[in-house]
Amino acid sequence: MRAAADLEDRTEKHIAMENRLSPMREMLGEMLLAVGQPKDALGAFEASLRVAPNRYRSIAGAAKAAESIGDRQAARIWYERLLQLTAEADTERPDMTAARTLMARN
Image 1 (cartoon, rainbow, N blue to C red):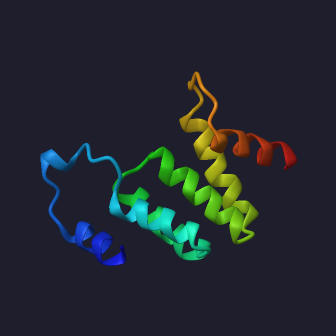
Image 2: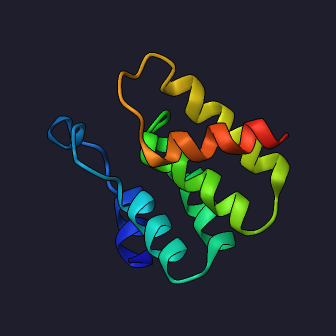
């Protein structure tokens, strides 16, 4: 997965790739989070967001990863960003609920 993400990072972007479903680096972050490597996952999500800013899944993943490693300040920043991104949403997703819960505790 790291090799695929590295390859995608080095590949020149083509107009046909603008609307791909998920960046490889974001998928790497999700995989790392799932296997209990939140610190590496956070780095992957942050790298993904530098290339594809404001992606819900990357922001939510970064928040979960930061929370998992015990970095409350970073988790708060990411959850705030998630709530800003979804301020006009007409549905509630589990990540948004987690963000509101964390913000209420602080």
